[in-house]
Amino acid sequence: MATEQGKSRSGEALRATVGVVLFVVWAVLTFLWFYDAIHALVYGEPGPAIKAVVWLLLMLLLAGMEGLEVAVIDRWSHLYPERTTADLAGWLAARQLFVALIVTGATLLADRDSLAIPFVAPPFTGVVALKIFNLVFTTLTVLWFMQIFPKHMAATNADRYLKVFQAVLFPVVEFVRVIGISWPAEMTAQAVQNRLDWHAEPTLEAAPSRHDESLAKAWAALVP
Image 1: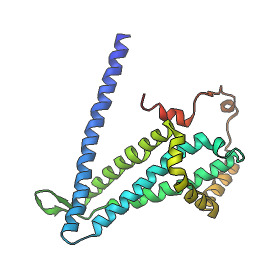
Image 2: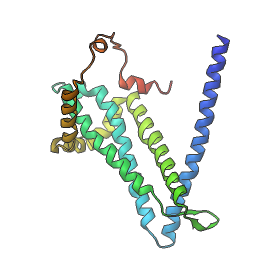
Image 3: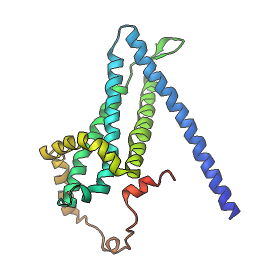
Image 4: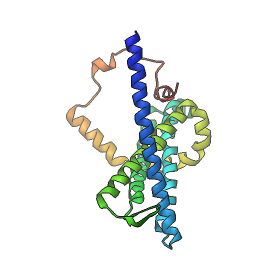
């Protein structure tokens, strides 16, 4: 028992150490990225600042959409008791547009041809280093604050999350669903499933059900 507790403490210490290091790295990258935008604006180049504002708005929209996924799955039968699981699947498929579009757009907007660094002149222009900078900065930002954080918040209190975001985001997702942007993927999935006989295995269907578990409860348990 003592050995297991020691391993558990060591594992938590390792996670905390890596987490702190990554957060410090992200904080430095974030500071440099916004500093570069403000520096360019001060010297008469508004492009990076405009990109930064649009990037931030897209990130906020992505965060709202990611949490909405968990909240809607958890409360679908209460929100729409007359609608089926197939309707929920169609709604979720439509919502994925925003994930693909925003992550792609944010990556392009975050990219810099040069990076101004405080007390250093001229601006840094290393192509490979700037690409790595963009990759790490965008990945950590999306992962922590537009994926994990909003999903946990929505899972912890789905009703409150829906109260804040439902009126604004639901019509947008519904519009995407109605016009059929996700239709090609749905038809592709159907064709491949039929061709490969890709269905649930009987052994998996017969597995014991855990009624006390759900996607929302799993995300809510992230923070004890």
